[in-house]
Every structure is written in C-alpha cells, then in structure tokens.
Image (cartoon, rainbow over all chains, first blue to last red; front, side, top):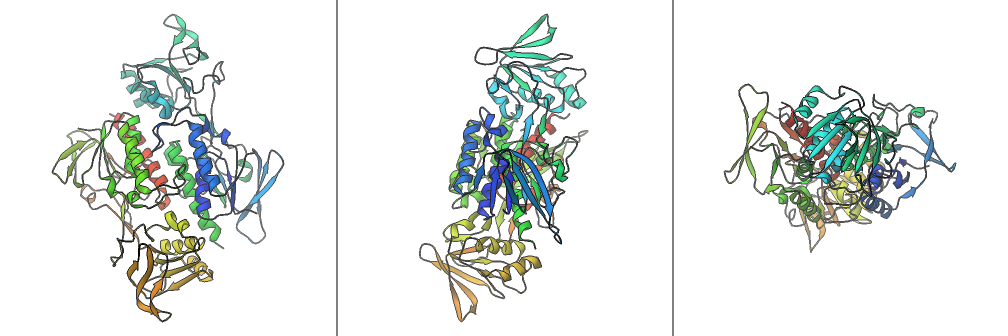
Length: 310
Length: 310
C-alpha cells in the first residue's frame, strides 16, 4: 500500500514525484514518458533557463531528477482505476491495474495523464510532426519567422494561434471547414484587420506533404484557383482531448471540455484524488510545461497535508 | 510608451518576460535580480531538471534566457507607481518612477516584487544565511539529514516546517515566544506525538552563532538548564512580508496577509494590472519557483489578450 500513486510521467507527474520525494511521501509513478506530449515537442524555448532544448531531452532531465530522488517509475499503461472505502473511514483507497495485470494500491492518487491532441487524420500528419507541423502555436510560433504558415481550426485557440503566428510569420492562412469562425467576434475583427492573415472558409486540408519538411498542403476546394497551397508550417488547432477515459468510473468530475475540475489545492471532488497538468481545468486553461510542474507541486503539497490528517 | 512593464526580476518576472518576448509584447523589466529571494537560496533541488543548483546560478540562467530574447532589464528600484486614465478610455496607463528619477510608461504592468522574509533581527542572522540558517523549510529540509535543527515560530508554517524537518533531521526543536502554538490543533497533536520533535514555549532566540556554519543558538530562557542550544540548522518561519508598499496608491486589493489578490488569469481588481509570484495569493499559497514561473506565464498570456482588445 503506497501513500501516493502518480498516474502519468509527463512534466506534471514528474514534478509531483520530485516534490513527493522531498516530502518523503512513499509513492510510485505509473506511466510512460513516451506518452507525454512534451516528449514530442521538437524544440522548447519557453522553459525558463533553457534557451532551446528538445522536448524529449528536457523530459529526460525531469525523469532523471525524479529517479535520482529514489522513486520507482513503472513504464506501463494503466487500464483501470478502482476506489474502495474502508468501513468507518472517510478516506478512499485506490486500486490501480496496469496493462500487464499488475495491481498497485494507494491512499491517494494524482491523475496527470495529460491530453492528446485532436488529429485531422490526414496523410502526412504523423510524418511531419516536428518538421513543420505542430499542435501548439504558443510553443512553436517563434520558429516561423518570415515563413508562410497555415492554421487549421475555427475556435478561439485557432484564432489566437493565427494572431500569434502573424507576429512572426510573413503570411498566415487560417483554414476552417465551416463559416463563420467559432471564435469571439473581437478576435475575428482583429484577424480581418490583420494584413498578414487570410481566412479560408469552408475548406478542409486533406494532405500535408514535402521533402524533409512541410512544403505544401492540399485542400478539398480550390483557393485562388489552386487546391495546393505552398507553405512552411502547418498548425493544427482543432482541440485536444483530455485522457479521461479511465477516471469517470470512480466519479471524478470533469468540465464541459472534459477536463478534470480541480480546486485551488489540486484536489478533485473525490477524496484522495488530486490532479495536475494538461488534463485539468487549472492555470486558466494555459497548457504549458511551467503550468504543469506548478500544478504537480501544488497537488503534492496538499497531499502531504491530507495524508497527515487522521 | 511600452505595452507592458514587468516590475521585479525574480522567477515570476523573468518567466513573464520570456513569454512576453515570445508573444512579441513590447516590454521592459524593472528590478534587480539581487533583490529576488531566489538569489539567496544556497541550493535549489526542486526545480525540475536541475538536481542541485545554487539559487543565484539558476536565476542567472533565467536572466540570460530573458535577455537573449531581447528584453531590456533595468536594474533599478521602483519608487512610485502611478495610474492615469485617458479621457473616454476604460483602460489605464501606468507611470513608473525609479530611484534615479527616471520615468517609464506602459499600458499594462505585472507586479512581481515577491516577498521579503520577516526577520528575527538577531545577531548572526544575516551572517549565517545559507550556512545553516534558512527561511524556507520546503526548500531546504532535505539538506539536514540526521542533523539537529530548530524552527522558530508558532504558525501553521512553523509547525509544517517542524513536521517536514522531522522526516530528515534526527531532532527538531520548535521554539515559540508564546504558548500555545497558533497552528491548527491537528498539527499540534501530530507534533506532540512526533518523538523527534520537542516544543520549547515562551522562549526567544537571541543569537545564532558558530564558526563557519551554524553551531549553536542562544535563548532568552534556559532550556534543560542551559541557555545555549547546540544544533546544525535554524529555520526562521515567522512569516514573510509581501513587498506591497508601492501598490496601494493605485488601489490594488490585497488579502488579509497583504498578498495581492489575483484572479485565475493573473489579473487584479485594477484594469491593466496583473500580478505573479510570491507577492500574490495564487497557487494555493505555495511559494516556489515552479509556482512563480507558472503565474508569470499565465499573467502574460492574459495581457496578450488584454492588449489586443480595443
């Protein structure tokens, strides 16, 4: 019986583990670092102190730091989360089952599974990830100085991505499958006034292609007489899906975007269940490594207090 | 006229600047890195990815990262913050005056002045800082494995510090000038049951002394027949004072602990004023480098949106 099991080995989970080790909380981490979105970031330039580093390299630094403090990190997928309440206790125990049918038990858990980017499921999408194709304009805009880029999507995030990219790129296409955009009117006004931005409505991207890097995309409708659009970067901003499939059985509340609702202290509505990182509705919806590590530290600090309560 | 002036050059301010540069927000930072509490931390072992680093070294990494992205950092103290509202506008402009009587103007500010630790003002207090004397048990407990330490204070933080230290140290004295402790009863129960912890009531520490490192403290009342207590570490947990002396003139709301009240997005009650780091009531009161950098990033992301609004 562990005091804490951390579910997920991305920045939130590993930061939580670093803090838990320093609080001497008897814990393990279950999850694969290769599943963390961060491991796929081609370059990270907004983690303070590292001017430019590969996502996988920075994640390995976090991993090694956590390991150095003695934690066991079990690189397996979780397939089931169970909850049990002892007679006469207000507190829950948790039973975690992994893909190899191993069972781990704990007095508390931190859910830090992260999110998966919603995909377009088009040809070339996987192949060009990190080679001109990105799911994060906040992370990667600055790499496209004086380049031509396109954003796919119609939400506020997509509009924000186009706006952000226009600060760096020479030209930004915003491609949306419907009309009008779903973003706030003020965002639309701004984009329409922005001479670098062109909005292409009622159009789907069907393919991304190039030699080693993104060079062009194909559209399902001609634009300016051509179904092929030459560009250097494609940003897919069609939302992300919190990895919450396992948590609903034990009654953890999620918001309308399917993110786990956390309180200021990282707790959820279920006693003993805390959450941190991209899977939560915390940090005002900003999903960054800095916000993930912070939420991990806050959750563990709360758990330290929780475990000491009788 | 800048779009943003960041007040404070600690982890919150520098993280805010890194994000602001990436959003291409026209901004400067005003503040001295030497004023940041972090610059005085002897070793930091809970910043993910750095297993052990001097506070000043990590801060310089943040500083260099921010500078590399082109920001000007003005190493001066701010002596006045003014606010002006243009006719017909709902937005404020800000006028910042520094100790050299220079004036800087901006459309928004982030207040990231941090806190100053409340001091005991006893002999040896400055001299032994980082050499056995610390103001942060969360940061420094793990350095006192099998050592004898004392905590000064009577609040929840002091009780928590004693509890945390008992996980590492061989013996922990908790010294409080009154009786009983001001902490939650459950915390007190726990300390009383903890065989490593001894509470010394109605006693003041008057001096900290040693050769190169802390070796003993002097008390204003004998304890076990001796006014001298031999130990390896002294934790002063008598609270911290948010550096809010300048902000009240422009009407920024603070909470009962004098911390700036921030909303989820880092905004305050004054339009155009955002805040981040130890000076705020954010991150559930946890004051760490990870929470500061996160709050800096969240505040700047909100400002990016704020500046784009007409």
